[in-house]
Image 1 (tube, one colour):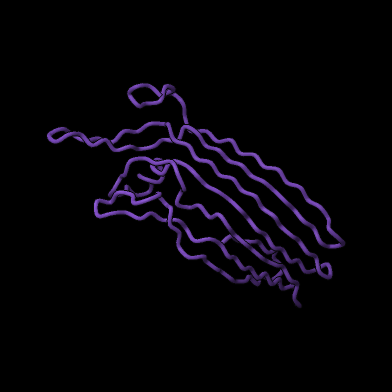
Image 2 (image 1 turned 45 degrees about the vertical axis):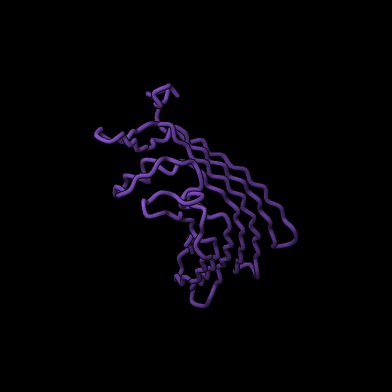
Length: 197
């Protein structure tokens, strides 16, 4: 960055590098274990910073492409096949999402936030560090597929703020309670899909 606080490469645009690797091993007949790692890094994100001027002078917002975000995920999945026609899967996902909190899409899209705080690099509001998902596909008579699913995951993070709307403690350092979802699908003669809830 230059002394003015703006990036030295003003002609750059946001870019992303994502890669993943997976290993699958048959533990025994009809039981498979898959372990995968995913890494996604986005750089040159546009961020917004408020600048408060001394009394009598005009305050302003600065837009610069100095932001970044980083997502990491480790997933372990066990897959069972029962009597050829039934499948049962269970996954544990450990992930981490960090980045600039004042990125353009968070502050101005789709609606402008009424309070714009100084930019901070930290836990992003959609960070879900722990997730357990179990689902299955079962064949029933008359070519009906029954697909139950259960999802247990960490609650989303939030920030404590004071009366001036400033952060108190670590931004997004608090977390709501864990969330559990359960449901099913019944689709005649149509392949079933797994939906993340």
